[in-house]
Image (tube, rainbow, N blue to C red; front, top):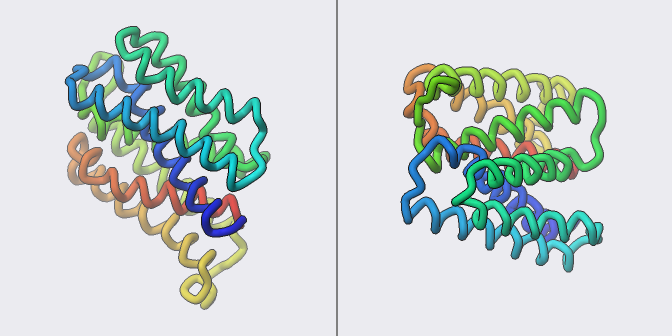
Length: 218
């Protein structure tokens, strides 16, 4: 995969994960004008990147159409939270499939956990850590941080690089290090800041998600 195609794919996955997370968490937060415009912007950008990616790589036409429809549907269904939530779940499933690139077994399970966790984190970053009877953002942040750490450590173990110089001298090595180190930073923020970690840790989760997705192209 060339640099342009890789860049488009990573941007598409990141934007779509933010969109899916925002749609999932929409029922928990107040829908202000700014948040509404943000989700519409993410939906349009996700659809645009999906179409642009079709010109860079060979994409399945059905998957492309499904992605575009869901990306547009999530913001359009903001007034109907239940419908928007299900559209977001379907969009998140696409993100998982696109992140794993056909992976199976342990790899697919790790991709699913990491992508879903990142989407939830992004959703709280967009809508704020709103507490409900079923969701306690503080403990959830710690749980997500722990999942990121475990997933990153497992991915490192499966990478086969070990503790050798390739970790600092090759692109794949640096990416693997990022997948391990960034979740540790985010996990630490979650322990210290709890619910406030969503905003402060969003950049770290985003970078970790991009690094994780890039490993799928190795």
